[in-house]
Image (tube, rainbow, N blue to C red; front, side):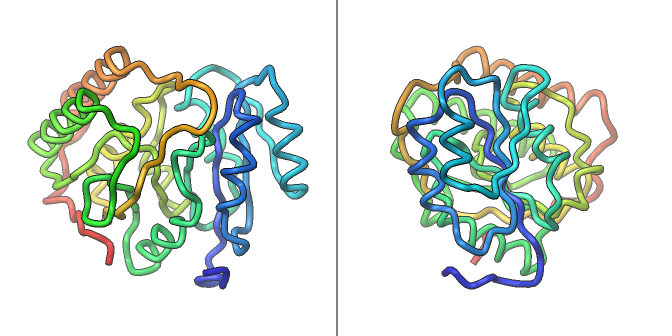
Amino acid sequence: MNKQPSAASVSVIVPAMNEAENLPHVFATLPEWIDEVILVDGNSTDDTVAVARRLRPDLRVVVQSRRGKGNALIEGFRAATGDIIVMIDADGSTDGREIRRFVDALLAGADFAKGSRYAPGGGSDDLSPWRSLGNKVLTGLTNLLYGTRYTDLCYGYNAFWARHLEALDLDCDGFEIETLMNVRAAKAGLVISEVPSHERSRIHGTSNLNAVRDGWRVLRTIVRERAGRSAVPAPTQVALAK
């Protein structure tokens, strides 16, 4: 599992704000063959940056210009130099050892590899029944409006070829970033593979996610994208990664 899967270089983007206690757990799961790790710091008031640099002396640090996970990811994507970009969370909920699955899906022909907690082999230790229901409703609406076959819309473990950043044209600041990526990947006609992923509970601290507020932001994104941009070109290819 520590062998470089191909000649393609891989950048991992880790947005973080006050995650000093969680970073040792997160970084310990990252494969040795990763070429670049970029920590995007949301102006942390704890030792997040110092801990990260101690754990990975080769770390690159980007400081956010605004607030929000979307802004953090966009700035991290822009700074990345790898052929493949992987986004993971800094709270310990996403397992870096799964990165190989995402990279393999891209090397097998996908343009965009999206994690799914509902695909066979996936799961979650953190989803409440209320959040799960909301996610399924929003996923169903997206599939209806965009002709996709997604099983999990609101999940932040994704990877894609860096050359598709222009097609994604990301421009939001909040947690709706994952939904925007999924919708625009479909509308651009990218080949999408869903990758089974198991979400773990946050290790330390509390989440900044607000299910109701951020759910409304996701819904507005789905509707706005359908009304304001060009239609989906042909049925989007969504396959389950093997």
